[in-house]
Length: 159
Length: 106
Length: 267
Figure (spheres, each protein chain N blue to C red):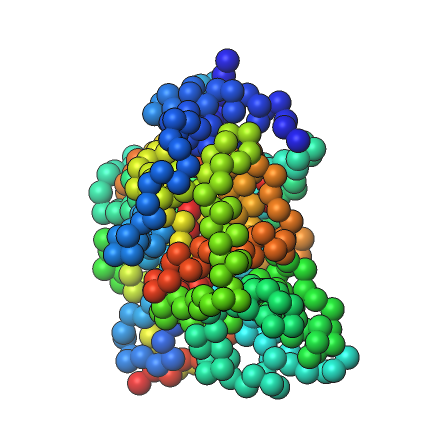
């Protein structure tokens, strides 16, 4: 049974070639602006007024993902991880997903190395940001650009 | 049934940093998907993961719907002493899973 | 007219394919030379390959461990577990999935691994069959197929199985559905090319049941084939249909000699 959406997609087969190249066009610009604001707010809740410096953090994501439903992500933070100098928390944010927060990791010197590997959902091609909070109260960050052709958070196909 | 799978060495040298990899069987329903009839499928996710080493919390993660289904959480810890390493996943609708492993540290 | 490209990627891709391939006659090109065959593994990104390679991070293993528990659990009015007859699956099931679909003399036709497992359930365990695509059947199939990991696919074609192989081949080469596409047009003639940003694989079922990122779960070859049929706007066969098993037989024979990867991970 053809739904109206399926019919449009079929009929506009040619249009989808252009749509694929303009990958940033998936989420409506108003929606994008709202989500970006939500991310800034979430960031502010974690960081407060403290300036966030770039560096010490290494965020690894594949530049072109096979499928937005499960994108391997790894974060590492340079730190001796001693009781005097360690990473207290690592937060990962996105700017275009329906919600800005992805994971918040809480750790300490017993971790040995500051880092986490997991898999996340990416709704649209965007920048993902990782923020590390150190024991001395400073914040450091790194970001990575990801391109998605098969997005998460949208409806699935038929079985 | 395997609700979670945990992978780490059974023994280690004192002070050695060991790798721990965990996977939990969970759909991580985001709350943003709709059925074919347009009804919203309610959120149902794992919210928190905690690892405790002989009772002391050594690693904690707060998860959001952006974490993929059947979530992988991989991290490290220092092998300090022999004993039990416990893993706990807690989530919506009363979801709670615990796995424990033993480690021998020389 | 605005199009939500992300919403039905399969259909959008197929629509694009239809425009590109309309002029090609089905079956015009030869099959892929044996030495040029590549697993879908080779078309994935590095990180997805790493997900498959490490049992500790391969989400398909969650089903394999479930399957191991089911293997050892007594079932049915006969109160028998698989292990009661077959012992340790690591030994007894080694090489089995590499030979399926296989000819079943009682049924007079090939059956796939899922059907073979259900035959054991109903005839030996006196238990009800497991539904296709149910978690239990997927788990058992994944556990059994996992025991053949690394072994070459070894499908025996003789005078009994040849007619079914030919039927499967005919399906693979037949134009069908509203988009009038045949499997061969993409998977023999245009593998390696990009279809709306994603590479077209050769379509060898080396890793089934597999964890598909699109499904966010483990699924069978028939589930994937149903996706393909819907994608070209053809009526998909029901699960367990003989046409599907014939096509599975052909696809496995087409992949003969390639290594089993179950449980594979694919986009």
